[in-house]
Structure formats: structure tokens, C-alpha cells
Amino acid sequence: MKNLVRNSSILILTLLLSATTFAEPNKAEKAGWKLGVQAYTFHKFSLQEAIDKAHELGLKYIEVYYDQPLGKGMEGTMDFRMNKASQAKVLAYAKSKDVKIVASGVIICKDEAEWKQLFEFASAMGIETITCEPEYKHLKYIDKLANQYKIDVAIHNHPKPSPYWNPDLFLNAVKGLSNRIGGCADVGHWKRMGIDPVEALKKYEGRLKTLHFKDIKEKEAGEEEQHDVIWGTGVCNVDGMLTELKRQNFKGLFSIEYEYNWDNSVPDIKKCILNFNKVVDKLY
Image 1 (cartoon, rainbow, N blue to C red):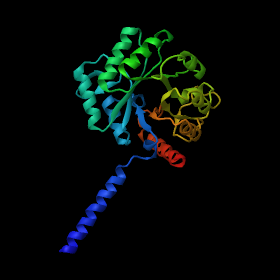
Image 2: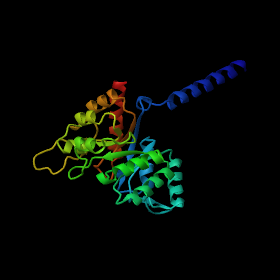
Image 3: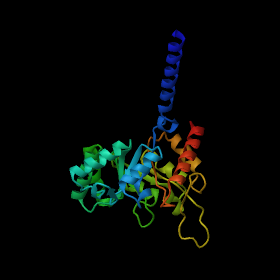
Image 4: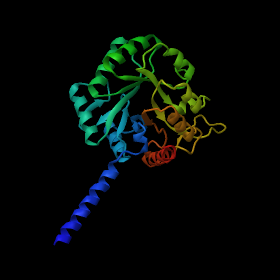
């Protein structure tokens, strides 16, 4: 009987230790790298379904985009004007799937009143970073709001004619602004614009808040667009980018924005995550 009790105790202890080991953060998390997903990756689905897919992928973080239908039992779309009841439903659903809404965008507001409403919404939702492409004339006001609400701003780089398509344009625009104002580096857009993502990330050092991380295929003759591919199989130099981010001691959100195989992208994204973790394991 004593042996049975002893063996049972050993088994329980072993299971507890295994569970603790499994729950430990991986190397990326220990480095302060939050791997999440930009909900636009699943823009053919509702926000609820996007959260479901994030959960299926084992991701803890999501960056929402505006105008996505909310899903069953919720009227309307993701909107910074949504009422408190809708906000509560969205937050409750995300929490039920162990997914945290940490960022929102990409957005451009028309005037100061709209920017203030956006920050009030972000504050109520616990959003840590607003991803946007503001007009230059609004930057100082946005900086004021960012410090008032203690919310970071990550300025995104869409391709031309975006006023931030080139790293130098971004850096000139944010000169003199507080450290609440930084960049959201869309590395795929850089590459499509003929900009080396690794060199661009070097320029962003000290201003980088988040990334729309991706890899894209090599451009072929007659092709209009270089679509997304599984990380590490394209031309963005995933290893080089992650090595540079480690050198910078970057800490922040990597939003997976996979803009291909729209109807069934989860299998591809699983491979992206696997390749990401392989590179991180080598780096750390």
C-alpha cells in the first residue's frame, strides 16, 4: 500500500512538472517578441472566426482591423464608434479564446475629433498600439493623445502614394515627436517598393513599435504582384530580419499578415510559425 501511495505521488509530481514545462514561454516570448495575427489575414471571415483561427494557431495576440463583421450574436462591424455593449461582447469573446486584442488598424482619421474618439475607444478596449497612416498635419496632436492615453502609435508604410512608403519619409515626419510615436514595419511592402527590409529595419532602430511580418515570392516577368509565401521561402530574408531585430533588442508585436490563400490560409500560417520558431531557436 505504501509503495502504491509513493508511486502515485511520484506520478502526480511528474505530471505537474511536465505541465509546468509545457506552460513555460518559448524563446520568442522570453525575448519579448509577441507573435500575433493581423485580422485582415482573415478578412473573408468575421472577427469571431478570425479570433477562432488565432486560437487554433496557438496565438495569444490579435491586431483587429476596422469594418470587419463581428460575427454571430453581434451586430455591426469592428468600429471605433461601437457602443459599450458591443465592446464588451468583443472583449468577452476574445477572452474566451485566450486571445488578447493588443493593436488596431491600419486607420486614417479625418480630423482631430475622430482621432480623439479613436484613442478613447482604444483605451476602453485595452488596445496598446494604434496602427495608422496619419496626415502630417495631425502628427503633433496624435502625439499629445498618445501620451495622454498612454497608447503607442505605430505608423504603417503602405506603398506609394503613402506618405510613409520610404523609411526616410517616416523618420523625417516623426522628428521631434515623443517615443510614443513609432513605426509599424510592413516588410513586404518595403520589398515590393525595392527597399531592402533588413536595411530599412536598421533605419527604424529606436522607433520600431510593431511589424506586419511576412515573406513574399520573387517577382517574375509580367507579374503584377509578389504575393505572400510561407516565411523563409521568399525574398524578404526572414533570417536576416530576425537577426537584425535581435541586435536591436526589439521587443514588441509581430503581426502575421498573410495575404494569400485567403479561403484556407491556416495551414500555410502554421508553417510560417514553425519556420519563425526555428529561426528564433537558432538566435537565442
